[in-house]
Length: 259
Image (cartoon, rainbow, N blue to C red; front, side, top):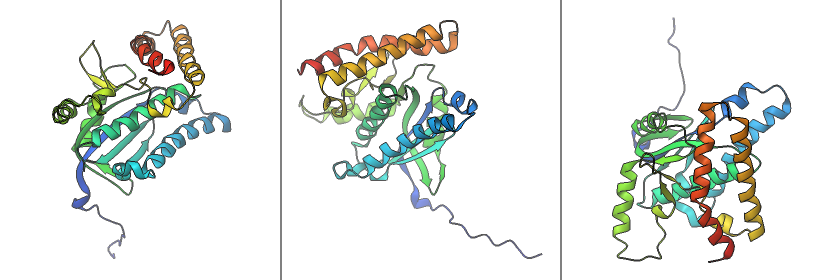
């Protein structure tokens, strides 16, 4: 029997590079998939994934954010993997801003969807719909270990890198850095992406629009606390989110008042 001839591109080692990598679960997404019974249900799932892809494309096509040219996003069922080659010391900051935006957009818009994930750094091959590497494996494994809260936790090695970079700012308090976009969880000490801190994307809105979005989030959380009050597993997420909302209230007041 003749040997089977298969034409395909074998992954090359030069594409196995040090990357920022985030493994993110779309919370409740599996439930949405299992409940698809109509075109409308399918469209709801599809448009959520399309929104992620659109945001990634927008970042890739922005000249001012050329560092994100290597950003790669893959959807795997109810999870999303985001990778970006670590070619610049500010790579963590830029990817954190990207994650911050998609987390805010997903809770502030009609999606009303929460994300939970882990951002780390390590070797990854992510090309031609193939992804593997210790960076990916670490992000996947550690996402399973960070608890119930709807947050994207940042790996301690990235926090260490961030501290070193900040220390080199020589006292400049005007420079934006990762700790302006992170919050430390008092319950376990993890740093996570502070997605309710207003970004430039939100600061461009009027005070009334910001207020409307903030109030919509509060209503969403209150409704979920009521809806899942007898489900101990699910309600913990919304109790955490309620407390997080309270901790970020001062950001909102500052942005509304224009200070």
